[in-house]
Image (cartoon, rainbow, N blue to C red; front, side, top):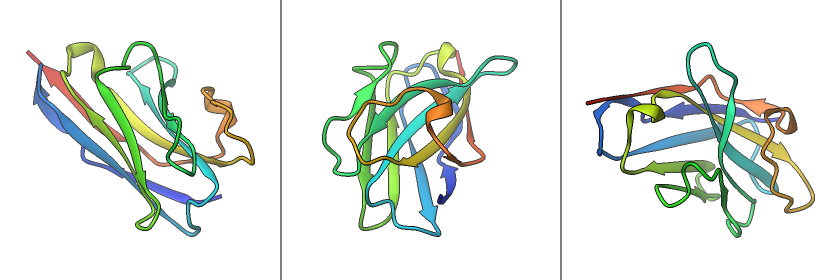
Length: 126
């Protein structure tokens, strides 16, 4: 289990872009599958994007593929989420998650991940 801290959120206009960051401490992220989730007020947490420890085979929710890009820098223990062409429906708290899996299965459920950050808020306005 690692400690995660998200940053980079803020208030932006529709159509803008941001890069969210997730910094890890306590353990290196080597062999960890990393993911981003979002949670709107009063709603359940939902999957956004995931990436394996090698950086290969990133995977995305259908709603964000083509607009969002997940990447990682293992030497810095940082995972990023580049968010483009933002719309009002992207407004949410974005959470970073991690789990040490031995396979490259595309985990997408919140229950699959044992380590979580406290989230960074993204607000999109017209």
